[in-house]
Figure (cartoon, rainbow, N blue to C red):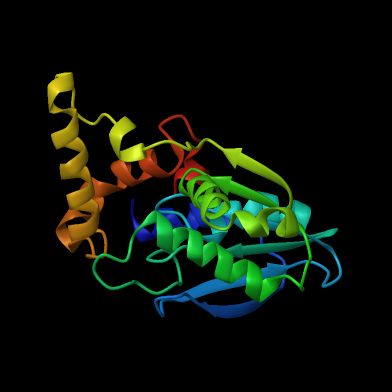
Length: 213
């Protein structure tokens, strides 16, 4: 997609309302970009986006919800305007800790919110609820998990059809790729070829072009 075409697609998205931006420091030091929309005294809704996305992926929801609610959205590590962690810094444990850090930085003591997560964002919520069980009833009124999974995603994703006997090796290889190359930038020569794959990972083949880009 050309820069001009990309600009036209982005311009079709709703204009985000004014926000208060803040940088949340993750437990390993990675800076996380967060934004708070809507009235300061509004009921809080926390949005966690999917893989390859960013805060703006929630443009329609933020534009609608921020009229009456306090909407909190943040970029996952290695996404959007958040920092890129050191090698090995992409784990469920850290995703859960990142969400916990954002909740602690944006919610008042004992304040409860609705958490909504798409794809990887839903996985982050599930990981947070498993690792911070003592905080779930204190922080959450309800959870919305959108197009996500609570299982072993690396085991379930089938990019290649292989006999079941090779399943353990496939899982090990998948984890190795994520840990080894997860923080590396995509070479310029591969950007065009990677767009379809990124769109499929983020929102699926059937999504509207505006959401894919």
